[in-house]
Length: 532
Image (cartoon, rainbow, N blue to C red):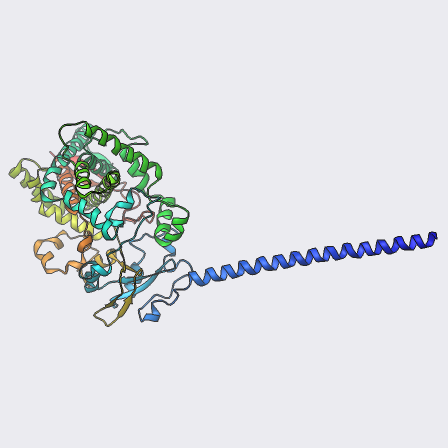
């Protein structure tokens, strides 16, 4: 009996052991099956993602359009752009030279195919004569950029027409005359600051920082009707100057975010990357709301851009809540490109004394004729200073590449026989910097020569090889106002100071890849010496 019990126990133990081992085996099998399932799913997802991101491989060559063979998976030809080694305006330069005999060629900006058009006839069609086929520009996300979203630069269709209508009407000849007082007052403030700071001796300054105070002062007066105290050193978190610096001063992380928006807009939308930090959207909107509340109590309407926008919105039955957004577009565009242009003008003026002497001779003649450098008539008479500005903009265009999106099917054909049929949504790039430095269009293109922009030379040249302000219906609506404030500010300096390069100025100039606009590393260091 005892033996039977022991035997039963042994059998039970053996069965239990077998069952336990079987359970562990089943568990291992299940784990292996689950792991295999996960690995399979992940592999399939990665393969699907790879196929999706590489779906456009050979897109251009299949259409008979030349394309460089150096495209990388995911990044295309924009590896250096993504990792902030080059910016939007310089990323195409090497490929442009490689395809010097082609009227167009294809690139990949990230996974997106982009047709680069080079020939002036194609540029003319995309920007002007065929505008209806390419009416759309790059668009921002309204949720992440509620103010900049309304900028006509980023708008299309009826919203573009509405936004552009505000700009064009605000910069009519009559309205420009009204803006001159803002320019004059800021020029006076700038000169007062310099006289207090320099005394009778030379004074060194960094051009971009200094002229941002000037353009910020003009913008605050002309657009918002306020004195922003830009030359008083009153910069705090919520000052207009600090807001602009937060958005625009080049930084690596900022450059990376901006490039991500351009290269992977779908991803930027998912993770809510914005051009303008949300606190600035709120702070600027609050300033405008306070100004609007003050004006509602005033009997006499103001004569500034904010008032013009308010009346325009009311007249057209548009949303009055757009007031802050449209005024923000005016402010940021008047602020940045003009300060960059003035910085380059000061550099070249200091570098080429013979050019500076011609500019000063023109200023002296203006003073004899008008007694001021900041009246509407005086500014319009500054033809040589304007030539200098236009040549600086040729060499260092703030926006180095224009983007357009096809809105309806069209076939482009170059004079070399290249043909490309584009469909809605296809992207076209116009390499402004490369066209401006192309020896086919410009003699000795790397040389600084303001005489290129004499009336005679401008008439003799194809207008579609100079694109500093764009062309066609999307031509920069603020170009005339921008040139006015640039010319007046430069003339005010030349009337009182000679300009020299500082030892801090780094040469040769090195472009800063951290910024989507064109600027240089190390700053624009000059020395002002009072005229005797």
